[in-house]
Image 1 (cartoon, helix red, strand yellow):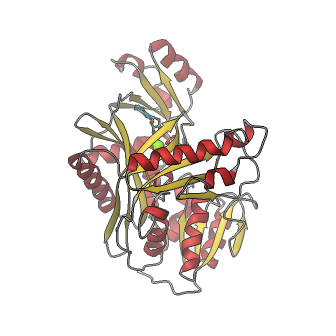
Image 2 (cartoon, protein in one colour):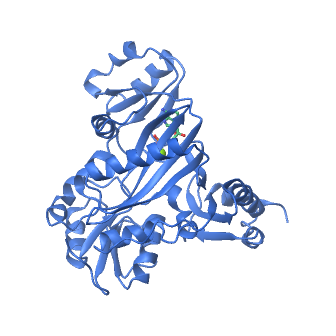
Length: 380
Ligand SMILES: Nc1ncnc2c1ncn2[C@@H]1O[C@H](COP(=O)(O)OP(=O)(O)O)[C@@H](O)[C@H]1O
Ligand SMILES: [Mg+2]
């Protein structure tokens, strides 16, 4: 184990908003930040001490990051785990490369869930060499076909209502590994965000309730409106994954809640969009805890300060309207916290920022977050 001192540098692979929010916490503790990203304008590149402008999986760039940084972390999963092997061997990569490799491949990920006794939706792993066979094995529709690798925000997945639709998706994606997953008519989606430090201590942020639109997170609410027994089961599943897979840092685990069932959907070995509300709603946020874990420091407590709701601000708010979003109108809603990531170009579906509202209850927080976001685009 290595404890970082003030002035030491933390390397972050990926320069997006997650990296930027990690850096804000790292700066509070006096660390320096080096970022690796191909885009010099990326949110974290705007504020980092050192920029390495290169592809995420460029071995020379990773080696350079390893030279300038005492410890290295990443803000997204699609980094070639192989090029991180050296850093991992040196015990300077958090979370570890095996956990990253498992999380970036849905086939390995689901196999790990099952191996550890966690329930998932029914699924078939499809090897490109065996493309035709799985069709006969699908007994019930709808199903969701997902690319095994590279998917995010609903990209790389298709819902199929019948075998004809499944056939055409399989034809289109004939040369890549896929997962065919049973569609789950869930009551709720929840996530558990948790952090584990280098001594194995764990803290969690309870169950967070998530509402998606077109496969992209729209709102998150904390605490989730689920019975304690459901929450406890989800949290214990997340702990099992964290311990068994040797997590150091912050991770999120997504679940479908259907009646009494808690099915694990996927995990992300990094801070997560559904945990953004922890910045205001908890004494120590998912980013603060992550940086502590990476730096070999003790974690802060898991104390929740308030119920909260977060609304994502997608590029659509910029592109669908003639005027700029009216930020002052949104901020006029009491208790609105506005976060903008500094992205220069707004595109439909692109995460540009988010709003968090604290309130006495999760439902009030959700209503106010919705109100605040609507105020951004109200005619004025
Ligand atoms: N098997 C499923 N049944 C019902 N809805 C699903 C299923 N798989 C995914 N979804 C919906 O699509 C969203 C995104 O899918 P997910 O597997 O989490 O991929 P990613 O977040 O990587 O894009 C989920 O949060 C959920 O709303
Ligand atoms: Mg997801």
